[in-house]
Image 1 (tube, chains in turn brown, orange):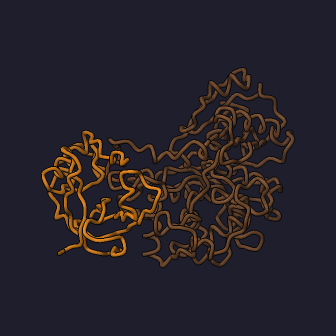
Image 2 (cartoon, rainbow over the protein chains, first blue to last red):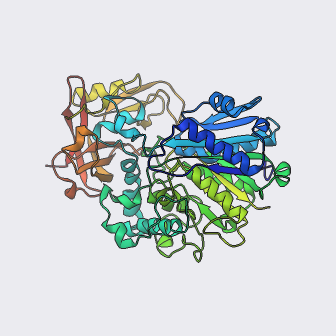
Image 3 (cartoon, rainbow over the protein chains, first blue to last red):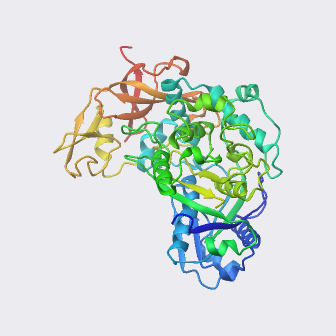
Length: 380
Length: 138
């Protein structure tokens, strides 16, 4: 599948705390805009890949856009873990001839739509029956449990987490689409209130309304379209052993999230190594996930991610691995990580507001702490 | 208004666990052929794929493996208990057995990783007793 398919179009709505239109409408807007970006007619779309959690069905998308026939449709589970996998599935469909023009999207009014955890009911099934009765229901608490152990094992500090937040905001300050553009300092991070110790408010992503979409076609077709193609060098998924979704606390692999396994597959399939990656968009619902990802994707050894972030490695333009160059979930918008995919494409096109000069290979990762996926995009 | 506290909805695999808690015993699922202890409960042993398992009482002793201190906004049922310490306790039996709970006999400022704890049971409804934790020897 290496370089067989490419992202040829990207589209999105504005980001907002309250966008004022339903998820169905913003989904359609984002897809329409991605098709326009690619220069493709909606009638050419014959594949759709969505998140399981998406509230708009393929049928709704198809009959609103006037699609003639959808011959490939699929969805990917596990919330924010799905993003890169939607593109991976689309690329597989294109590479195997199951479809020729595939749209992937995420539309989520998480800013105005309320907090899913607040709807925790009285009778909790599944793995959460062992955690929710103790008040462990918010994603921030679930991830803080990993963060605390990382601090204990490796001496990671809250300031190390803060370095991730400061870098993201620095990048967002150059990005007119970003929700939060006022630069912050480490002192601001430390002064922001505690949400779930050891995590402060500025360790958390932004509750956002918005929608984004990409269009995947064959590499050959993409070369004839309007935009420079972002070739799908590799895409992978991973789950790891004895996983428990968001409460990945059981079994022998604590602090090795499904990203460890997705990373292994990704680099094996790509033929490149972490040293070849020019820039990265790491899933950043919470800052510690970026540190874990640096380790799990092989950019440093376990335990070294805190000092790496504190050294400025993630900062554009001078860091060794400019990361989350749009501001990411922490400062641009949190739309289940789908905005990271668009930024990964912009880096390949050369159109990021924090453009890494000559970027050839761009990494995007999806949800950490859940069954996940990852993507390597290439200019050629 | 304090709305209802989330309570476990037991299933076929977890019912013996909660039954043990109601009877004041912390029990773990043990694979009948290979003896591997597993948690959370599930039908099949991930080591030997056997569907045969039983339940054994464990010591109820462990140590704090990790913890968080949750600040508002919390679910209404927990709002009055903020800041709320939530522990991940590793049981002394090995096999990487870890369970989540609260610390019942001290505040969040007293928690540290490695702290030895022992189980107590908190009766939260007619049908449900939750395994909880206090400092060992207290």
